[in-house]
Length: 108
Image 1 (cartoon, rainbow, N blue to C red):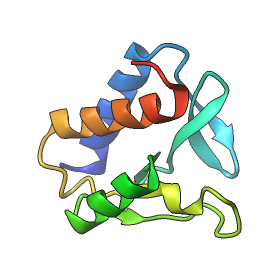
Image 2: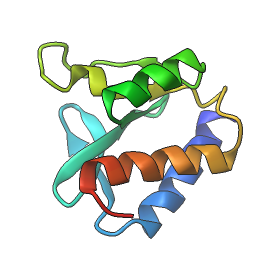
Image 3: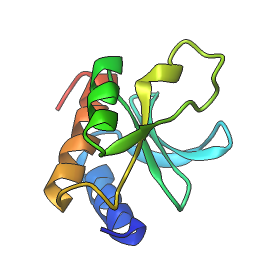
Image 4: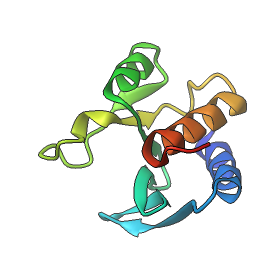
C-alpha cells in the first residue's frame, strides 16, 4: 500500500473515532484524542504509539520500525513507524490505528 492509501485509511479512522483529530504539535501533525497524542503523520509515514511489547512484535514481524520522537523522553520505546508498504491489508492498518487509539485513550 502507498502512503497515500495509508493516509486515506487514517483519515477515515479519524472521522470514526470519538474526539480524534489531526493537529500540529511537537513539530509534526499529530493524532490526538481526548487531549492525548496517539500518533504522528508527516506526509511520508504514520507513527503510532503502543505498549512497548507490541512495538517489539511489530518490528519483529516487519510491520514497523522503532521510532523515537525524542530519545530523551520516557515513552521513547512506545512508538513505531508503520511500514505501510509491508502492512498486509487496509484492514490491518485500520486495526493498528484503532489499537493505538485504545491504548492511549482507553476506549474503542
